[in-house]
Image (cartoon, rainbow, N blue to C red; front, side):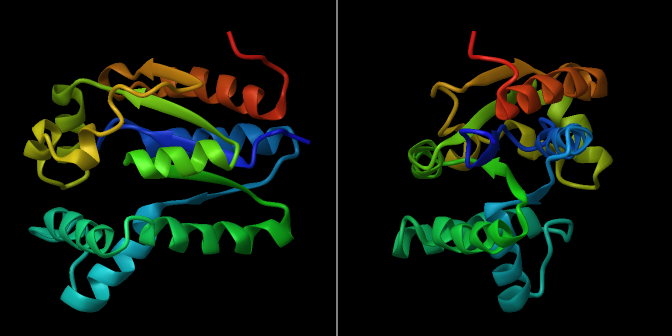
Length: 190
């Protein structure tokens, strides 16, 4: 099987990480490899809903999610990574490959590298991301934020990094195939 423990996707809000994750999952399935999307934000969303009764799509929801996530990182920098590791461990008995769709911070990136994940980055312009956020009913102004959750991984190295112009499904499909092939071992690093 693959030398990778999973696939981790990085990118700013609205860049196409979730769609890319779905695309990779579908392409892996055509090769007989089963996967499941996971996110560090899953536990953050549960906690925000439990404490504040808010979801990401509620007015002020994204900001509250960022606040809850940041607050727990202040208490324990690896808190959300530990929650994710539990989710990932629950997939292993079923042979499911985790596809992490929200790698955002340096400690998360380092954890993924140390644990042999294939790490990819999808980039898009703020204008393109604003359109996507607006289409999802989210605050389009978030596309221009300089919050560390959006900028901390801007300059690190990724196995695959590409631009997704205008939320292009064909671009995501092309790179989804490349990432799936890298994961399976049909392609080597360039």
